[in-house]
Length: 150
Image (tube, rainbow, N blue to C red; front, side, top):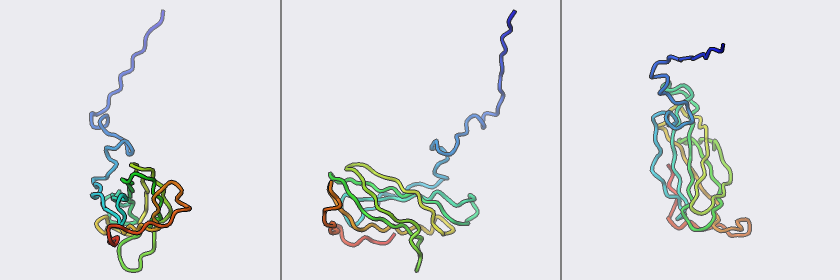
């Protein structure tokens, strides 16, 4: 004779309803994205989101940030970027070169040596090239005026 074993797990409803980081529910730590910021080049935009400090609510650094870059032009774009903490003499925390296809975006995760989200970050974009063969194209001239510091 075989007996079927039935197991019933009892857990508080709060534990069942929780989602882990990465599923989107707790991902923003209560912070939201900034509005899309136009760069000095039409068709190239960015936005930022503070992910918070290492220990939530302690106002200690470093601070984790997410920077989204979006290409709203009709051709591929390649550019250099740099991200630094706000304030005089702050070193660039992260820099590199990004290539984005038309109508797409890319995400960069940056750790900034600051202590609070409301201090913000500076995002710089330069050496912009629009087109498929970016290595053989001249740099595009800004067409929106100067890239204002954020």
